[in-house]
Every structure is written in structure tokens, then in C-alpha cells.
Length: 208
Image (cartoon, rainbow, N blue to C red):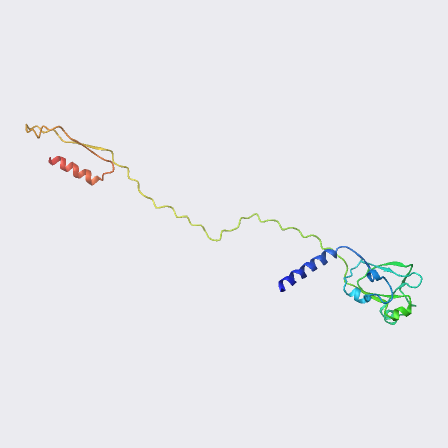
């Protein structure tokens, strides 16, 4: 539940930030306008809103019986209608919030002011927009490997060329023995035979 509240809080702050970049006009008292005994107390109304420099207040009231006076704190508390900084009349009035800090408004009807038809608006700060940040240039260097790559060459295996086919011919004896008159024999040894086996065959052939 807590993470959901945090997410909604961040969303609300983001929306407030976006809205703060544009001046707005707010109707005092909403649908009730500037009257005696509205549904929502005027200071309760202003307390739930956020006012910034260059926002505008819109007052709607009965022209014949009412007006809006801009006063200082003392005249606000005492409902002094004779020392107004500025008087708004005509049934519909706009007041632009040009300075940060509290702004005090009372009705021009002292009796209604004594009964609570008055308003304090606190302007938070000067409206500013931060310049766009310069994007960071991408790095042109490749990332370093996490560990050096070691390549082990395969062990060298000697390649033995097989010896050429060896032809061993027995010498023709000069004797008259029929066995000696046998034709010369030839022994072909495969190239994959080891050199020691070849030597052994040669020795056997010389004995025969």
C-alpha cells in the first residue's frame, strides 16, 4: 500500500510542476462567487489551492450592493473599508497576482466583512522555467573488458611424413640350389610401418 501512495504522490507532484508553467485564472468561491456565507469559506477555498505569480483572481458579485477591496493585513483584520489599496467594482473584477506573498481582500460592505466575507491568498514564488538541460555526449570509447582474454595456442603436434614405399629385393644367389634360384622377392612396406619394423624385415630377408 505504501509504494502505491508514493507513486500517486509523485504523479501529483509531476502534474503540479507541469501546470505551474502556465498562468491560470481562478474564480473566487467557484460557483458561489463573491457573496456572504458561501458554501465553502473563502480561506478554506484558497488554502486548498496553489497560487503563483501572474495567476489571476476572478471576482463575480452583485454590482449594486458589493465590491472588492484590496487592503493590508491590519485593515483586513479590522474590516476597515475606508483605507483600501485598490477598489474593484462593476459586478465582475479581475486581479492579477504580480507579487509573491500574502494578498488581502475584503468586501466593500463592512457588515458582510464582519461576518466573514474576506479572503487571504498566499502567492508562493515567482514563476520560472528552468532552461533545458544539455544532453550528454555519448562516449566514443568502447567499454573495457571485465577480464583480459587469454588465448592458449594449441600444442604443436609433429607431423611425420610416412616414408616412401620401400622395395626390398633379395639378391639372386649364384649357386645351383633350386631354392637359391627362386626369383627375387620384393617386399612392399606400407608407409605407416615404423622404421624399426623395416630394419627387422631387411635383416630377415638377408638371412633367407
